[in-house]
Length: 241
Image (cartoon, rainbow, N blue to C red; front, side):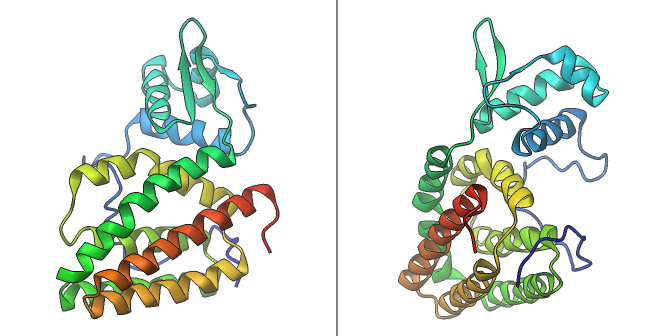
């Protein structure tokens, strides 16, 4: 199954543990977050060239915002690594290379399998049931080809595991590139074979949690992330099948 559509899912919404801790649901996202999302999307879509200077006045006019949220957005994107702030030049678009993505996934591979393995040992029946519920929603979204819903359900699936006993310091590290990886997936999607593999990998993770097997959870988590990295590089380079 090939997930290419952006139709929104009607499935239940679970908390995104990787999101910023401040709850903005009642007032909506602040202007700088919306600006950062728009600039990030335009960088990934190639509307800004690699190495291009991002002038605050031009960006304010482009996105119909004042200078303050634009400056905050550039600081946030600099923290992600997608924009580089240079003395006397200001903000410059960073080239998103395979090496850059590899560095991000090295961090994820160093943290997530360990965390998921430890949480598998202490997972409750309720935790495993919640993972199965989200997995059902994930497979429904995959069958309907709703890319945004697939991405969100995948985040929520792993969020259940990491939320069993949250390691806030580790989550803070993972948050740095979370939005960038999500945006890359929204842009490039998943290939047919990757979608089938993800379903299998998720079921193996659920099985490891149900058995409270640290070793099995860590092994599948490493495979899951490694396969995700390789397939994302293939999608970006246009070689995915």
